[in-house]
Structures are given as C-alpha cells and as structure tokens.
Image 1 (cartoon, rainbow, N blue to C red):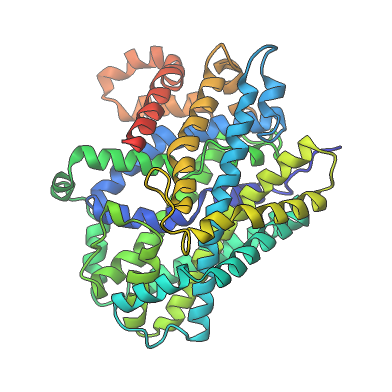
Image 2: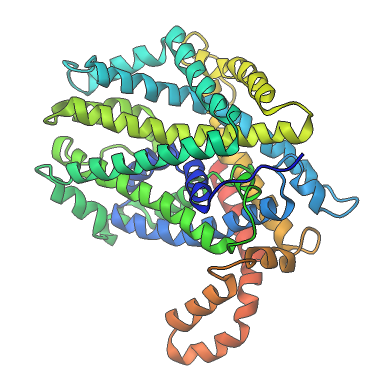
Length: 479
C-alpha cells in the first residue's frame, strides 16, 4: 500500500505545530512565568528551548522521514539485525494512548465551558469561590463528562477517518488559522485593559531580582522542564508527520519553524493572561503547585466576568483553548491510526471505528477519578493525574533519550546518517547554523580557534551533553 503524503509544506508545519501546541503550553507557560520571575524566566526558557527542543525535534523528524514509518515500525526498518531499538514502539504507542485517556477529558471540559459562555450560563456567577464551585460541579458531573469526552473522541478520530489530506491536513489547517486569529485578537484586546502596562512590564522586561527571589536553581529547573515538555517530543507524535513529507526541505529549518510557532502561541497567551490578571486580579498569584487546568475555569473565568464584554471574551478564549486542545488530539490520534495501519490490514475507517470504541472505554478511569473514584489513588495520584504523570515525567523524557541516542551513537543509526537526513534538501543547514553562532556570538579572538573545531561541537553536544541534560530532566521530574 502506497504511503499517504501531506499535500503541502504549510500543512506539515501547521499540523506539527498543532501537535506541539497544547493546553499545557498555552495556559501553563504564563502561570509558570508568573511564578518564577516573569521576563527573566522567559529568557532562560528560550535558551533551553534551543538547547533541548530543537535537537530532539530534529532527531524525531529525521527518524520519521528516513524510515517513512510511524513509531510502529520506524526503528524496525532502521536498526541493525539483533538490536532492540524497536522496543521503543511500546513506549511510543503506550504514551499516545495514556495521553489521550486524560487529554480528551480536559478537552471535553473546554468544550463544556465554551458552550457555557456561548449560551450565557456563566453570567451572574460571583467571585472565584463561586467559580470554583461551578468547576467542581462540572468536573464531578460524570454523565456530562462522559458525553463531552465521547464527543471529542468521535470528532478527533472522525477527522482521521476522512484521510490524511482530506481530513487531518485540511481541517487542522483551518483550525490553526482560526486559533492564531483568535489568539492575536484576544491579545490585542487584553493589552487595552486599564492596568495592562503593569502586566506587560512584568512579562516583557526582565527583572533578575524577581528571578533571585524565586531561586535561580528553581527557575532554571522549571525553564528546562517547560522547554522540554512543551513540544510533546518522545512518543512519536512528531515523527509521524516527518514520515509524511518528502526530502525537499532540510529538517533543521522545519524544526525551527515549528518551535517558533509553538513559542509564538505560548508568548502570545501571556499577552492575554498577564494584562488581565494585573487589571482584575492584582497579578498572578498561582505558584508551581497550583498550575493545573482549574486556573482556567476559576481565576480566568472570574476575570472574564469582570471585563466589559466578558461573555464574548470568555466565549472566544475557550474556543481558542478548544482549538488548541483539538489540534493535539487530532495529531496524536493520527499517530495511533498510523500505528494500526502499519500493523494490520484494516482500512483507515475501520481502524478509527475500533479506536473510537477502545478510547470510550480507556477514558473512563480518568472521568471516574473526578467523581466516585476520587479517593482511589496510586502513589498519591488519582487515575487522571497518574496517567498524565506517567506520560510527562517518564515516557516523554525516556522516549526523547532513545531518539537522541539512536541518532547519535554507533550502536544505533549513527550521527553521520542522522546529520545527512537532517541536511537533505533546501533550507537551514545544521553545521552552517552552528558556524554562524560561532562566528557571530563569540569574541573575535576566539573565533579562529573555535572555527577549527566547530564540526565536532554539534556531534559532541548531541552525543554526550544532550543525553545528560535529558537524564537530569528525568531525575528532576521525579524529585
């Protein structure tokens, strides 16, 4: 069977960015920024995004494009006889299912709140305590949560059933365009609020005094973790779209575009939240321990009700959040569907029907953990939080470490093959990009000496330093 291909480079960029742009990115980034020093944290975050996000993304894209396979068999066709890299398929597909088991529930919450604002049901709700009660009732409403989650599952896999180009690419492109339009519009409106200047000053002008108060080590750890987890790397959700593209463009340039778009959305979400919080909430008071979806449904919802035209703003904001969530749902479901297509002889539509039924069962523990199974905990986590923690704290870093080691060591694919795949096509070359950094960022007297060793810098970093950083992230995530 001939492998499907995306119809355009724009489709590849928007779908890959849609996979990376998720709820944790657009709400968690501003709140962590508020907790850890504002603009100073943003600078540290951007540094780690380049050091961590870009190299791991190029590794995942390279494996996908070189193999022309999903996580189901990409390592099988690229490893040498007797090697065990193919075991990564179980980490990847397990991570995709676990992510969707809890992520579809949160997306269902976004759907329900969008409908609440659209119909005016949120008008008249009082302060944050009243919104907490509303959110608690919604989260504990088993029947409506089941319906909303099932609707998200049906829409996500229904779009995948239409095909790669006619369904996933076409609908995701329009959804991402709408998402970006909503984002820019809401940010522009938020910047007109009465105390927006204070919020923007906190967000955009670095104050290392704030960073020192939060703790330099804590800030670095938080920035490193956010930069690593924001792109959803390590479980093959990005690699699958690498397998759907040709060799026309170099992968470093594509990765830079995807990461830039993901970062743009994160930064713009801060332009929505900080001016609003400083106008109506005296700043961002949440700390790292309270960064969770309830912030959207309590603090921000109470702020929307205080704004002029708050119903419209709330409706558009939760529509934006719904699009952000659905873009990830569709991308991850496409990875799951591709896995089944490579492992079975079933049609795409049959695979989607099977997975609709399967996901309707698998999502139930997360739903029930918000109501009558709330007291059932494993290692201190309810089922929803446990599923999320396994993906974020274990499978993503472990999977990313496997991709990097496979691409850089002689026991895997090898650095030469990896670099050759990354540099195939037109666009930004990895060695040339590193040479530019050496020639422009270092003092003049150091450039000549460094220029002689620059070809070894990327290899040494990818083979030794990057795996060490990922291992540190893995350990710190448990601590």
